[in-house]
Amino acid sequence: MASFGWKRKIGEKVSKVTSQQFEAEAADEKDVVDNDEGNWLHAIKRRKEILLEGCAEKSKQLKDEGASLAENKRYREAIQKWDEALQLTPNDATLYEMKSQVLMSLHEMFPAVHAAEMAVQRNPHSWESWQTLGRAQLGLGEIILAIRSFQVALHIYPMNPEIWKEDLSWARTLQEQQKVAQRIKKSEAPAEVTHFSPKSIPDYDFESDEIVAVCAAIAEKEKTVSSNKTMVIVSASGAVETVTEKEDGATPPDGSVFIKAR
Image (cartoon, rainbow, N blue to C red):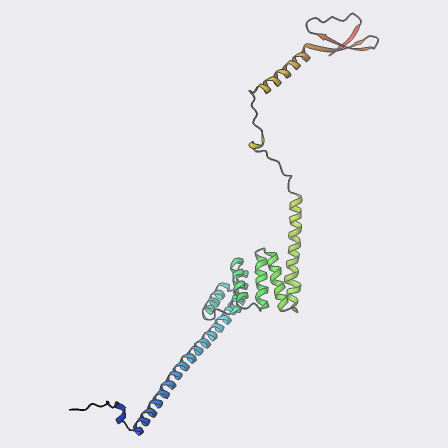
């Protein structure tokens, strides 16, 4: 009768030296794979850095070209250059600030304010951006907002005489002129005329008994007054006498009457 025994594991026939050699080769291959992966990531990072450096360099070139065009008053071409630069470096606050100045020169105040606001959002610590924003707001007539922008610029750079003597001083002068104009306009405004709406006039019933009775009483009074006539008689001696006579039987004055006035 055959006997049964436990089956051996497959790896039991492999020598210990062979196993150690295999493990060492596997570890070497793993190191090579890790090195290749690290090199690949480093290559991607380096390529991205090179691309960003190229974008920054190209953006600076476009910025300088736009500045040169703006100095020659070729404003539209300058804006086009700066828009191309913003495609490469969208967070450059200086590009928005320069664009706002050129738009003000073109008297396009709404886009100028928008560009200046974008500059402030990109770099809230730039006093030049706040100054440009204040000037653009003045162009729109927003004097209070402009004064606030100039005050922020002074808070960032308090030793700037240009903002003190020109921008903020001019804005405050305009504010005072605006207040004076409002007071004059208010004093010259005509008095308000009260308009009666149809609802404010009561709706009388002119056929009611009370109204009819009042009208009858008024008519009777006028009739009584008209039936009597009053005369002023001045005699030849100078005496004045007032006589009331009725229409139906008035006694004629005697021959001594000199003047009869009604």
